[in-house]
Length: 307
Ligand code: NDP
Image (cartoon, rainbow, N blue to C red; front, side, top):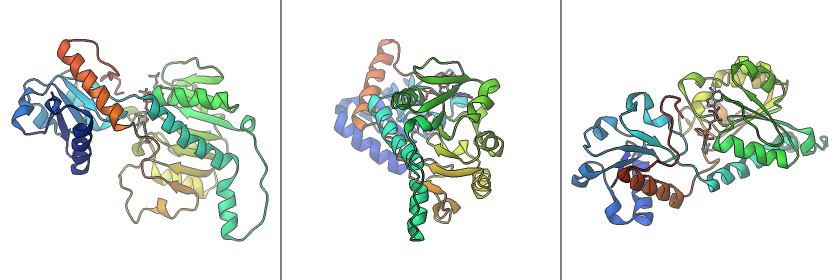
């Protein structure tokens, strides 16, 4: 039995609709209902842990997304198993989004749009994929997939993760010791890290200065990875050429936020990629079945590592 566990009313409605469509009625219930006492799995987005801890049969807290930073893993500890959603169409969606972002800078659409506003006719150079150096932070389910795809298109791709990876066509770096070398060759830096305690504010002045001058940033990780003031300063000083931001420390982005109007910032409203509801609900039903049977779970999170 799955219980819906979120403190965000809009998400509660999405989850109710998705479960109604993709789960048999006997498989789920609402928080605070009598049936919730039987719940073995909580489908979660910013859950109320005080409430979940009152449920006697709960074994699994399942993120409805790829990220788990909204769950408060520190408090969960080893009390419950934690899983997240991983799906190929989710990876493909991210790849589509990022292909557009890379081409936007590769073919100078940022410059062309600015020129059109001034009715200015000037042809930028034509760069091919082989001329462009992409750096990907995080080589997990998302970053690893994206790195391999861009390498196959002929881009010069580097990737950075905690442990060293081997990905065909990708120059891989690992750990803090190799971070500077990785950054030095990232003209377009894509952030696909999970948010953990040790990488809050990682995209800051120190990091921007280690990138080649005129580098571009694409943040698809989490808003808290980015120091917003540092980004504005780096754009204004031309250390950075531009930024495409999909995620923000506070979502929705405030109406009066400086990012909306900044000529070098492109804002997208956390749309880079969503797993289809059919896949989200399918994985959660599968894991609920597994947790009840005592079987190994799919896409389990390492609570100690935080992702
Ligand atoms: P994974 O857990 O599969 O991969 C995480 C990667 O980050 C791993 O390669 C890991 O290294 C690396 N990593 C973690 N911490 C560090 C660190 N301190 N230093 C260096 N590398 C580190 O996650 P996913 O790829 O599935 O997803 C990543 C994130 O993407 C999600 O948490 C979410 O925030 C974001 N996302 C955003 C979406 C959007 O629409 N904007 C959609 C989907 C995801 P190692 O392999 O060595 O452990």
